[in-house]
Length: 202
Image: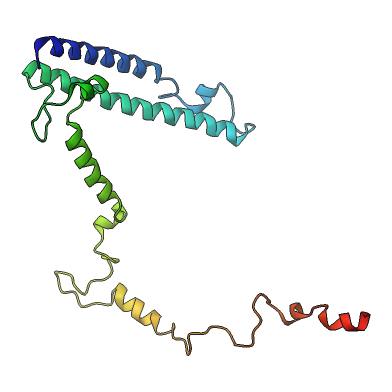
């Protein structure tokens, strides 16, 4: 990448950084002050919950925008540091040059489009798995199923509890209902219909 391109992208980065910093100041509205001060109401008792929900939503939205802008300012600063070091425009994974079209759209890009797609696919595949909470548990119920634990615990644990309770879950047959039971009726009186009286009326 020649010096002219570097200067062009440096200008783009500085413009974007200034824009994000201005946006940070604008999004300060509603943050750091109480809901009462923000709405100008003395009490929230007589307000509709929807109004309070709207105010809360706006404050949360501003907070998320601020978080995004802070992150992007960090990314832009990292790109400006790369310009100073002479490594701007190189992919951090494959070390190939990032296309100028990509840098025009996102001048703070760290990765080329191929590496970005590869990493994005891996992340998506990982996210299709189980909930993050389950990473702390040995599946299933790792805190209470201790038969395979390293300490070789011999105690009444979650698995033993399940086996004890499961003894009462025995069914004599697979069919829970009687064969002659009419589906859709709860009580016998509900089975009465007008069919038997129609002949009398005719």
